[in-house]
Amino acid sequence: MDEPDGLLAIGGELSAQWLIEAYCRGVFPWFDDDSGPVYWWCPSERGVIEPGQMKVSRSLKKKLRGNNFQITADANFGSVIRACAATRADTVGTWITPAMMGAYEELHLAGLAHSIEVWQDEALVGGLYGLSLGNMFFGESMFAQASDASKAAFFKLHELLQSWDFELIDCQMMNPHLATLGVISMPRNEFLAKLAQNNLSDTRLGNWQLPSHVSAS
View 1: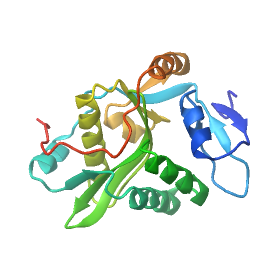
View 2 (view 1 turned 180 degrees about the vertical axis):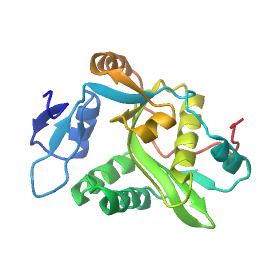
View 3 (view 1 turned 135 degrees about the vertical axis):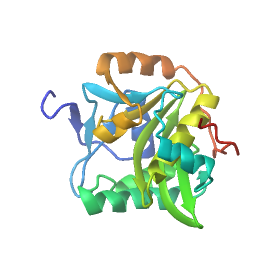
View 4 (view 1 turned 90 degrees about the horizontal axis):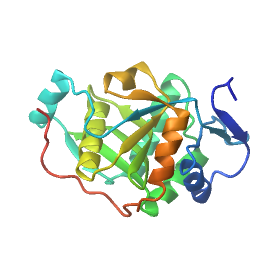
């Protein structure tokens, strides 16, 4: 549909297998109530960024160099997705419903969904999660409870994926915050063409580990 932009289908199942099939076709779920049907979307413009193209602010560089944060991967996926849900509920409402959390936690156990955690004084203060298929990462949500914490998570994700020669990070919908990080709009047809090639690539399964260094300069 043109209005609302990208609404493709209503119904179906919110299961791990449905999610995998959807992402391989450029489609993602977005709805706000488990009591109703699932809404599936493929917007006309996609927010994307190539690993290595992130804009890193001076304040973030300083915090990364100063080791203000301790950053891990796949250390506590459940806490990250619940924190993302709580953050969204406190602001504009959340599409991360209990059924959605359960489906992505199943994908995490299958080695396909991953989280980046940002810690400060042993407290979880930021993070993000998403799905990895082929050489693309499909970001779902991020949260921050300390300044620059979500940006630090995004930086570590982009650094890791760059080292693995990933081709693209899909951020779904564009917004002003993502633009400050270097995310750009890509027309749907171009995105789907890249996705078709990506579907031929092998997927890196299992829990992720982060390198110990930080290359922000």
